[in-house]
Length: 375
Ligand SMILES: C[S@@+](CC[C@H](N)C(=O)[O-])C[C@H]1O[C@@H](n2cnc3c(N)ncnc32)[C@H](O)[C@@H]1O
Image 1 (cartoon, rainbow, N blue to C red):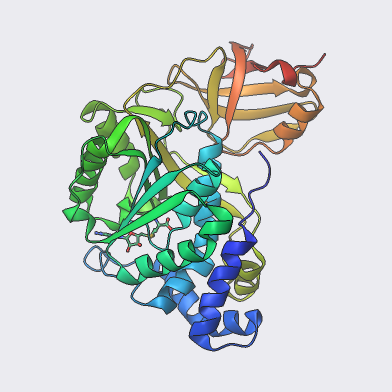
Image 2 (cartoon, rainbow, N blue to C red; image 1 turned 90 degrees about the vertical axis):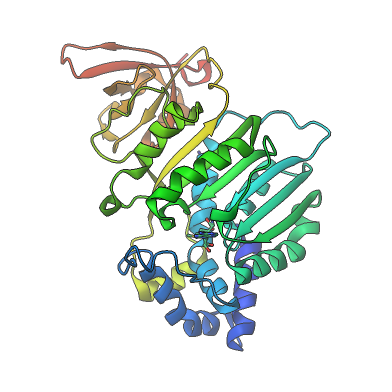
């Protein structure tokens, strides 16, 4: 897929909010003054994660927190969601009724903005919930400022309340976003939120979950995946091309590249965090199974390696098995070969098939789309 770029209008909005908070004269001055706030929040989610007792404390307490959070995290959120959406089957053709989006733990709105941008100018009602009043206020401000140019047919409703109090109206949402929220809830509350979200999800709808790759927290998303399949009777649209037990020996995750916005490059010249790659765990659920396809969908679940004339990659396959695939460049056209060289962990490949080679762990894969086949 093409490089994911954070919209400059969203970046400019948060720079302006931060500029007002810090009474700065230029963007560089703003970023310099915001740096301690940004660093504190960046540390909170990486180097300095709070223990269970403080994990639920409010950290988006005022406009300044929200601006710091949004300058640093919103571009990453936007890029992650864009990657997830690109791997999903297309959304149903719009009907007359607005699409109902529910964003649980919306923060300052970054996941919702990626969703609205992806959907284009179709009527949408966005119901955004969080326990941070400041986050909801700044989200509303951004929406009001950008609506007419960006999302003219969208409406936003916000609700400030703990997610623990969320009472779902059955089948009331076509898209549910739960982005980087579950890890902030006590383990017992995660299943509860998932169950409530499943009740709110309308037939044909999608529940889009993403979580950070937190190895220290254990593989809680694997457990939630199993719970969603067995107890909630949901189906998986992504990332797995099957609904068997996960065959991976580690938490399933994507590792994706993206283009850092200029403001984040400036901030990171001081913070020096590794932001080149986005490592995250997606899970997209629905009441209906994924539509049958005439190709085999496999998911890249490790780093591809490239040798002369071929790409090798571990892939999760539709029968629930892991295989090491050999993709011969000569089977692909020029565009297909270019894609192969940029192949990333988490991407989905559409194949015509794969067959075992002499080495029992290696399978020769053939591309599934006519346009990728060599003439
Ligand atoms: C890491 S942020 C992610 C925000 C947003 N989903 C995004 O991706 O940009 C987690 C959000 O969940 C909210 N949150 C955490 N626990 C919550 C709870 N128990 N009730 C309501 N909101 C909660 C936080 O206030 C925060 O806005």
